[in-house]
Image (cartoon, rainbow, N blue to C red; front, side, top):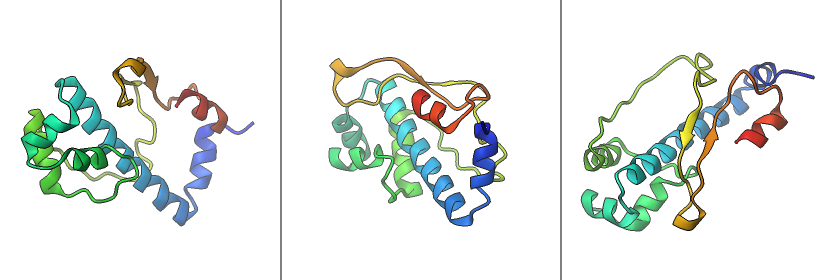
Amino acid sequence: MKMFREYLKEKLKNKEFEKSYYEGLEKARIAIEITLFREKKGFTQAKLAELTGTSQSAIARLEDPDYKGYSLSTLRKIADALGLELVVSLREKGEEIYEVRPVKILHLSPWPRARKDFKFYISPEISSEQDVELVA
């Protein structure tokens, strides 16, 4: 059985897959971070929208991992409203595919009663693509 790292390394040789992979990773990180920090502050989407001068539906779009319309000015408004520093960085592809430590995601559901704590991570312990699907 192929280790997941080997599988991903092989798949990333395909330029089309590589582009799609990194675009998806970028969008998911932004959406998850906005959601997590908004909830950590105890803000609803409507409250964050009010603080940033936009609509609740615009905040919902920003929290959607499939959304592509991010701008630095919008992200700066979000960061300011949440009391955060906006950091934009570039790095070599493949340098940090795996997180060193698990990232704890407290909540991704819009319904408070559906809230459950769970961990989302890719780590060296994951040995196959199937294992990633189970963990994620």
